[in-house]
Length: 119
Image (cartoon, rainbow, N blue to C red; front, side, top):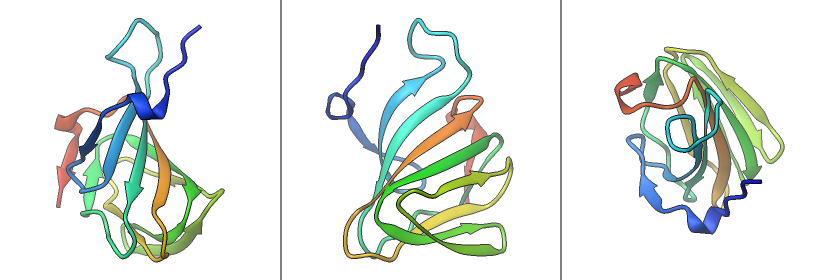
């Protein structure tokens, strides 16, 4: 059995300026899966940098509220929303609430720096 606690994962600032903690990654460990899973935080009033991934991504909003931008579309999001982001789409998210916006990021196949373009 494998269990990893969020607080045991080091924080870092991603290229899009979200605060991330990587929970699982296909290339890091002994498990056989294709995806990566990270926990992201965007502080109140902040917006991540527009970026594109060559791969698909899903955000699952855990806490807070915001605006999700994918290409030329915008939608309000909050706790309980799952958002599919197609490959090569310009994406970013804005925290419109007064508390941290927290969400999971699932990238399939697993996130790689060379697959991301900050715009």
